[in-house]
Amino acid sequence: PEWCSINHGVLLCDECCSVHLSLGRHISQIKSFKRSYWPPNQLNLIYEVSSNGANLVWEYGLLDPQNKVPRKKPSAKDALPVKADFIRTKYQQMAYINRVKDETNGIFEDLHLQLHSIARTDNVVTCLRFLSQGADPNFKNPETGTSSVHVAASRGQQNQIELLCIFGGDPAAVDSSGMSPEEHARANGYPDLADRLIELQYELTDRLTCFIGGKRPDHRFGQHIVLPELNENLDISDQALLARKKLQQLPDPLFEDLAMDVFDEVERRELNTIWHAQVDKALIPLHVVPFLPVNPAFSATRNQGRQKLARYGPKEFTTFIYDILNEVR
Image 1 (tube, rainbow, N blue to C red):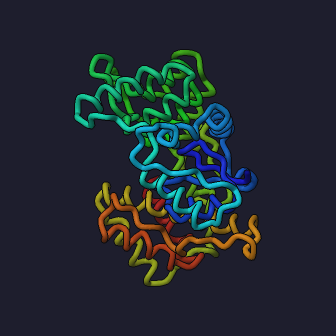
Image 2 (image 1 turned 180 degrees about the horizontal axis):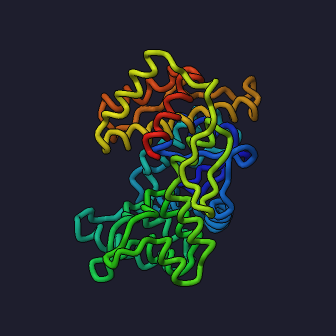
Image 3 (image 1 turned 90 degrees about the vertical axis):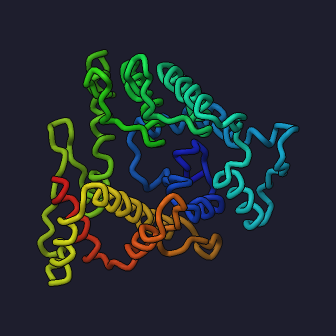
């Protein structure tokens, strides 16, 4: 396999990858083994979960005789539309996971606590199962005031940290005593994990910086936000100046949403470039719209704004990213 869905822990062929890309990053986070950037810890996680039955987390119902959505798993010889229908049912509808039977607040709190408990171990596939069922990686244990990320950090569980953060775990959150996961890791003798937790805090800005400048900051030396020298590549038109002024006036929550949307657009563009460099287009057509797919969790206005990002030309988009990084700094 040339591709991977990192939030599912499954390896993908070109055909299946084309379907996953059409689902959007909110459903499937895709990377190329050959051309994507891979932090070593994240690659270790994928090896661990894919080798230990991660796919069974998403296909539990196929083995359950009481499953109400009976479905035969497609074979490699089946047509792409058949595979695509199965993939959407499996990952978008999550029809085959082992769902929580009673979706009450009490049951979910118990699920959060189970995740909190398993995070101290190396059982990363069980952690994946809890996350697939809706466990919150940022839930804080009422007794200890720590999240699952704090627990994994204090026990040096690198794979758990990677998985929890892929599912939205906050690597910068502080516990009830004011300690961050990075501080927990360092205090317990895991300096490399502590350094990785700092990297995870700056994942968004690192990605944007690398996209427009080709380099990532070196966080080991306190280098967190770096503005590349792009004088000749920046848009200095009146329209760009007006856009910069509007950006500066955005309230923090809207600015954070916009930065995340730009992050998603960067990933879409990079994957599109990788796809065309890596796959024979005559053999495997890419069934993906040329803009960010709709995320049902977002408002119509935000989805429209996200899709308009695809209209930005290289210079305009580079300038927009530069302005975002400048505001963050």
